[in-house]
Image (cartoon, rainbow, N blue to C red; front, side, top):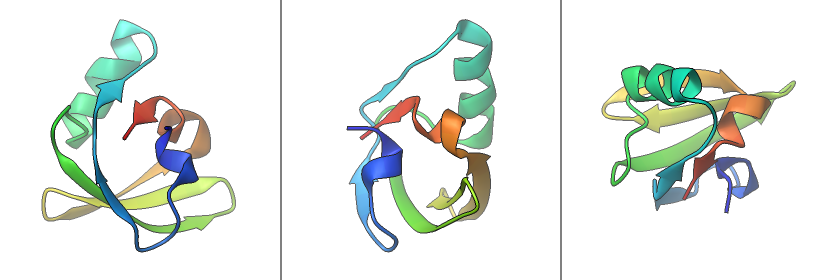
Length: 69
């Protein structure tokens, strides 16, 4: 399921990154790599704020839909 379906406070493991190669490379640069745990902190105004690898990252809802957990 896409990352956008997780509720605030829920954690899961990334199973797949979709999208074009440029999008996948961008997300991997932010730390979104298959097998990495991710926690959704909040979803505000179309942005998803996640905790990943000891950092907080905000990505758009469109980007979050390409991350499967």
